[in-house]
Image 1: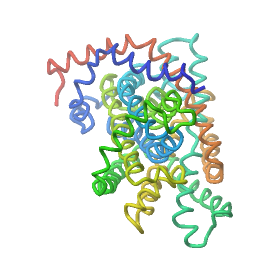
Image 2 (image 1 turned 180 degrees about the horizontal axis):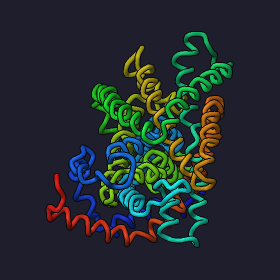
Image 3 (image 1 turned 90 degrees about the horizontal axis):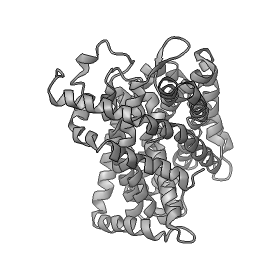
Image 4 (image 1 turned 180 degrees about the vertical axis):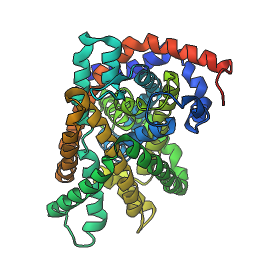
Length: 446
């Protein structure tokens, strides 16, 4: 499914949104931060929704700033070479506009579920804005969303680093025999995460709102130190990224197209722009102004791909870890261990523990909303039990199989999300233009 048509849909669609909007939203980054710090929250007192702009972004970032930024970058460089990072940047740049449009629609066309609660997300946008003839696309997204938000990838990589850093050195497992340890950790993690997930979106967003910012700061501190110690190599690594993006030397056969595909795949896995999952979180924001949530959402690709993924990529390149045999999270752990001997792998372990668990909690919320749309909210409890059981499965599953699963369902989710957003783009532009006009006139109270 990850052929040229899907790349055109995601990257070309994002470029279309940039041109269609005349990049007007790019002029309001300061307003985005004002919204995040609650400057206009008094106006949203009686607005629909459950959570603040800040918590909506924190929940969305909990789903994106995670292993896609640590393991995903390592996978991209392993398969596509350093040049894949350049195409991740391209995906993020056009993804800024994509997120503005999809998140605006998530507020503009919220719909009620069968229990009478207001919900957001691509399936509700399609149902409410486009009507019954488009419902197959809504079902397509919801079915793929139930599988694309499964916790297997995050748990698999978390258990892998727990095994490498703690279990094997302590003699609790070996590189050849680790099934019992993986299974035990899977069971423990499923119990802990279940206790948090029962609180639904308010508890999940509260946990994400506290943990995600602290982990981002922690990440920047240790990565900043690593890059500072290797500052002399950074210009050469940037040059390597640019040259490899157009030479494709790291890919068998030297195909530039293959490097591009890998970069777009991993870029989308990192920031989820155009996939639609982030709209499930932004659709819960407490606001009646669609453009406001669009402005908040567009910060996502900047934070998680242009900043966090770039730092991870540079860390892997300047330390030379990308040229070794390690893959996935083990490659990242190796890079930080080389920079901070004796403690580097433990630092990565802390990051992976927090980021993977917050991602799992966010994905549970996404998947349960898809389940509720398809089968009714009364059936969501069965999804929770199945989801938590699959945490244990993810602990012992093959990473290759997991990556193939995620790539397939992410592609499936992108099709209804992007098609519906392109069709509804004129409505977003009209709404945003009207909002920006009122904002420029100073009609909103501080």
